[in-house]
Image (cartoon, rainbow, N blue to C red; front, side, top):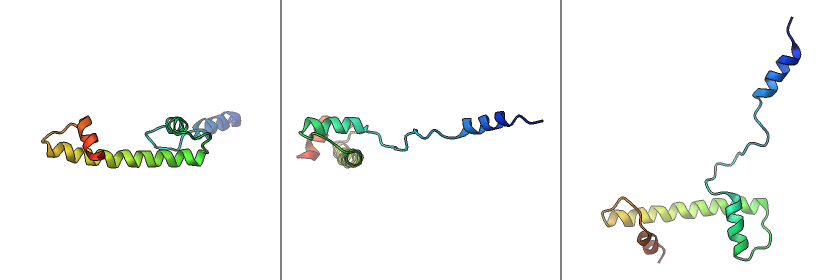
Length: 89
């Protein structure tokens, strides 16, 4: 005889949590919200926070690629602050 309550408990244990994060971003939403508020925003919607994260990560990625090229031009593998300064001028 099979204990059906035990079978149901096993199924429930294997279901993924509904609260699990689906976002694969590196930068947290709270970090960009803090930056936005520091720069004058009073309130930021959830969708705006997500877009800010996406754009910040895109910007940092592009900046990094340019800094890598600047470091390579100087025969270095490591990015330095001067590379960031150079590519943002």
